[in-house]
Length: 98
Image (cartoon, rainbow, N blue to C red):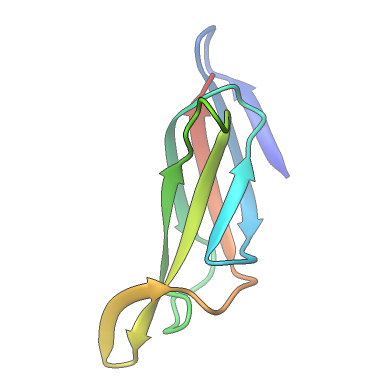
């Protein structure tokens, strides 16, 4: 579920909660264009689900879309990030666009 709220005539805000399915989940927001995006884990960190990053998709070919990438530590004693292999984790996200 997401919420779209008009901030002013030229900007809108969309937000929601994602339950991860893969290490790279695409979100369609319903906006025409995204200019800013942020995401944060909704669950505590564990070795198999360490953190998330956001990549705004090409707004020409995928308008209103962005990708949430999930990361994990390489091992208990190695904090080098690699693509997560544990899913079903909550991620809170918010984007600003048009």
